[in-house]
Image 1: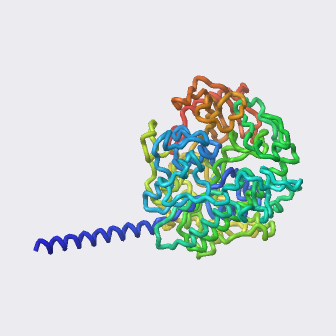
Image 2: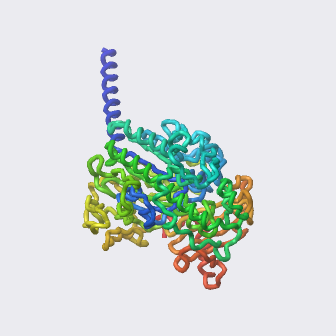
Image 3: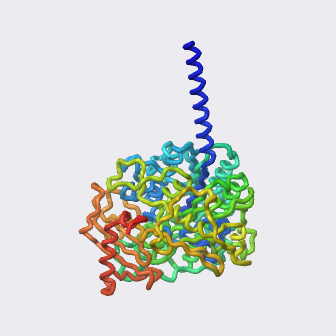
Length: 609
């Protein structure tokens, strides 16, 4: 009798466990997938950001079905610090990652990363290409196995990264910055970004809709230096159509500590041959045209690869249940302020493209193959390429890359990390950003997204009507107080729909320096070289920066020791060419902004007065 009861109890337990397991599997399968696209060194130089000379039809198509953020900023204009920040949801002073050498888990804390959060919640997580900065700054494993279900995938052809494969006019091969390549000149037949796109396409084609949800992170390297790309894309940008920067001087009254002498660019053989003086030399205009041409062409090259992956997602049946994010890891100078590459606190170095695609919310759900058909820029007439330069959904509020982690978590229905305490180093799960999912909902709440919304802007206006979003599939997200700034715009031909949502009054970034005057380690000082930290704040109309003493042994800033200050008024000076911090008319504003900078990011979180 006892044995029979025991067997019955085991059977009941087994049935209960099975039902619980089935419920868990069902819950997992109902969760959206995530396609997390990151592009290295990409400033908002895209058709969808109003750059009408850019040929980026696939990214523009994604933008036309996304919420596009017009004023998104990173926390530091350098690869590893920026990526570590948005992947942990924390700022550089908490990750203690300011360079390309330290690993946050060794120096700061054992933080739960964005992909790790999804992995902990039953997702298959896969890194392809550059997501974490490879090497010691991600534990030489791209943070595997913490963040990823499988080891991170890198293209085999990456080994040719520094090889001399660029043909020169003398018939010899060089390691040049400007390096368009014919297919026969590519050692392995394919460039690393192409191989990584192939892997991502294969990943999508070999998954089925009844498997666990996935978090697929795909990082493209171009337009990062060197500009090695398929030479066919150069033909999209005749030199006669290229324009170079019209503000090639450093900002008036700029302190020396602000300037970065672009030493990495100077390592390439074609740049060295120019014999540009250090640190304040100017690249000759003739070569600037070539640089800008190749930056644009490399961006179009990446656009085609983005298009291939989006088409594979669509054709594999995942488009209707996949959140797509697309953003750069920081901006990039193209001669403005006499600067090239990144490594500064200027707006151009910190501003990035950022867009979120949420099926059924920012775009209609369509049959497979209809959402993201591939657009081949090399075979399309130019009017086709510029078709999506006006986006249905845009947002001009101030957002930060550190906000991405909590936003994706909320959209996917996972726990949203709470705000970190003032002593965050022992807290494994928290964020120093804020979810902007409410901004996405606030736009979609007022607008019906139908297939008509995405008709060609060259042919007609968009179709707009009021609607209720209750059946959109978006999580239950509370909309922030209606008190606040007007941050959301619906671009609809000649019509505009606005929604008021309280959001951040400022965003915050920083950059370390080893000295006040430019030095050979200015752009990437090791931790033990850092003696100055430049803290910068972007508000609606201004950028205010203070360069203060920094103790790298205690990771602390001395706000009483200020080396220099900067204030740029974009309402009067859109390019930021004049540092007006010492102009008497700005003295009161400078005091106000200085206090706001010291109050920091906590003081401007949504909901704070």
